[in-house]
Length: 417
Image 1 (tube, rainbow, N blue to C red):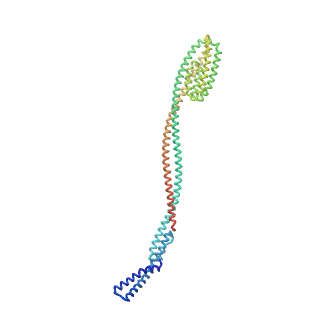
Image 2: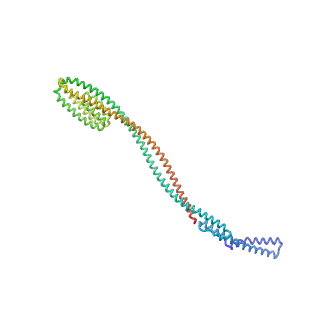
Image 3: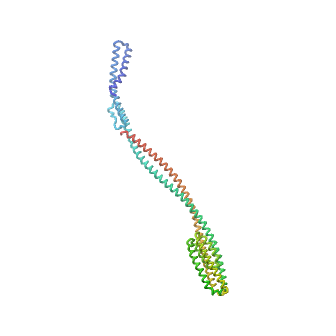
């Protein structure tokens, strides 16, 4: 407000008031006529002069400094905080200027700290957002990995269960083989007893077989044929050996010894045939052996018929029966060897059975551990998924914090400090 405007506004108030005072003075003193009006004019002029002087004084001491303060405050409201009030030029309002300057300094420090803090918040919130995003991605990757591990654990549990079932089946099969081996052992022992009895009978018959010399050549031919068929049996048994391993090898030896034993070895051949049935992949070779044995039986029948023609020369067969006795002795040795081998196989099967029992127990433990691992993996997977959700929420909060910090930074930057 200018000085003239202030004087006019003051005069508008002072002149009527001083005129009213002059009127009261005249009325109180009973003054009238020309003096009445002169007192009113004088009082009014005096009041006007006093008002003008007081207006000039007040404008200089208060109004003008207040205008400067208002102008400063308007700049301050516009964000310009670099200037300060000059208290020496504000007269009576020097203390006010000092207080305002102190307030502006304090606010400047506050805004500077706020600006610094907002910059730091923006920087750290950006880093926090980046870290949260990286953590979220890493957690999601971990979650996917754990999910794959959980699927692998389920597959492992299923595979272990199948393996345990197969081992159970193998254990049952080995138990059956062990039982069959025990039966074979009993049959071998019976064959051994019969071989002993046959050997004794041949020894006794040898004393009466001294007349078979003239038919030795024919018997040799037939026996040679039997040898050829025995060789074929050996070849086929080799194939069976590759399939049935040690059990088939024992069956081959038993079949060869049974063929050599002739009629006395038929019972032992049945036992050997039972052993061969334990091999799962020996069907075709067994059929071929059966056919060759049939041929051998036919040729053996020829031997019997030939031997019928020479019954009258029994006395000459002592030497041949002696040879047969030696054969029975060899059969006894072979049967003993087979018996030992079967006992070894039985012991091996028992060890294998014990091993499979231990394997079953171990696989059950592994299955339990795998199941517990799968359950624990599922729990970890659920916790990881919750962690992913939490990190996503944290990332959203960090983004909001970054946005808020930038808005505060933009607001603080409107002030020039």
